[in-house]
Image 1: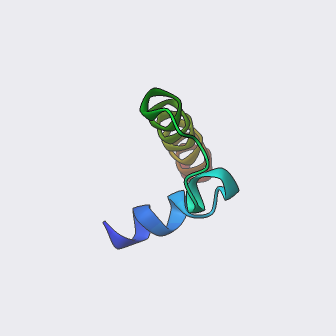
Image 2: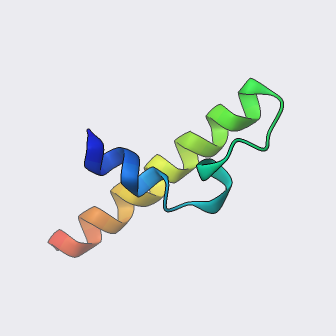
Length: 45
């Protein structure tokens, strides 16, 4: 869990929450999760 949170903190917009709306922040977290997963799968192949 700590590693995943540190990966999410690698994205500048997620380090400090600038977005006021929850839905935009949640979308950014989802996008970051997709990018992290994509990078991880690429590394395995």
